[in-house]
Length: 445
Ligand SMILES: Nc1ncnc2c1ncn2[C@@H]1O[C@H](COP(=O)(O)OP(=O)(O)OP(=O)(O)O)[C@@H](O)[C@H]1O
Image 1 (cartoon, rainbow, N blue to C red):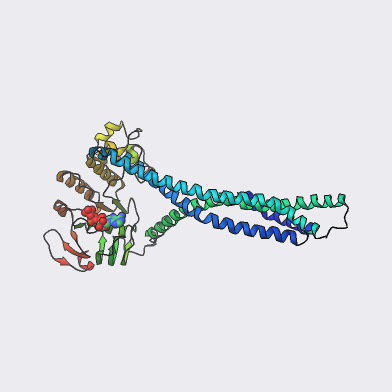
Image 2: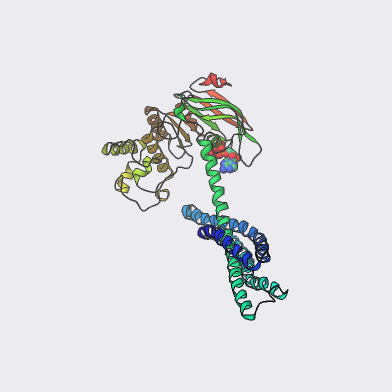
């Protein structure tokens, strides 16, 4: 396609000159006019194709996602005996996809008819251009031999010029496909660039913010994207090193949403939020509510999201990983996998219990040792003794904890509690015997 686009202007210019030389102005003008009509017709036919192709790509993605969802949640669905309903719903997605594919084929058919008609009529046009001067008597003085030589020369030039244009028009079918795919990929890239831009607006090396602070929130208000009601209104808070913060509140009051706003996954409605440390080791690490397990070996699970061991220290690193697996209470995994670097052919989500997943997430946290650990109900599947052991280890490793949870057992590991009360209201309280309400961030941290 690219080569045709590059070469076309040169061939068109060359044959336009020859066509003008042989037929006068009428030849090139009629061919150019014909091309303009063809282009307008194609543009009209291409418009709906791009939109339908975009829709088809989206439905294909949804259909594949449904398969993946069933595969990942096969056991839970089996407990519900949900085979029939899942079958019906998957079929519904397939039907929607097939309908769109059918509509796309119909629209493409009109484009193919348009393109082929344009090609076909182009053949007639060359003879029409030659016929007009002949029948209007321009070449009356020529002998039959000279006339047939002129016809064949003019026909050759006109056909080549028309061919140049038809090749461009033929590209419209490929172009409509490319436009549909580009539109979808472009949208994805725009969203990803947007997220990247929002997350990279602070450079910890710039030293503009205090080193002992992880997050600064000033008069922050936020809501969920599909609701008009504020989850939290006018919250001012500074999360500093050594002050452990517990965020509590009923279901749906916006605890996890606060992390989404801190992480720049959601936009704040108003106010100011700044993350003043970097992500990862030596900075801030988030343990999400649903543990994320990657594919790969046990070592790759523990060092995630790092690609290589950290620090690069060979067997010393192995000892650290084993020690942290023990501290997290999942050293038995070493036996199950056959070693840190043994390849496993199972899906980690299928073979670990929710509690084991949470423990493995803690082993990851111990290994990465961030300055700030943000834990979203990270111990909800564990007993209180296990929770105590994990929190103790985090503190021994020098981490400042920001925890979200419902359990009152969490209070003893934290200094300050932020309670989200719903409807935008919140309360900030000092823990450890001091139950005074705090309204200003300076008072708390
Ligand atoms: N991805 C999302 N898109 C739109 N709305 C969402 C999304 N995730 C959550 N919400 C809505 O935002 C509100 C706050 O959700 P959030 O997850 O912050 O609650 P939470 O306090 O963490 O609850 P829980 O204690 O159950 O974890 C809820 O009403 C929820 O339905």
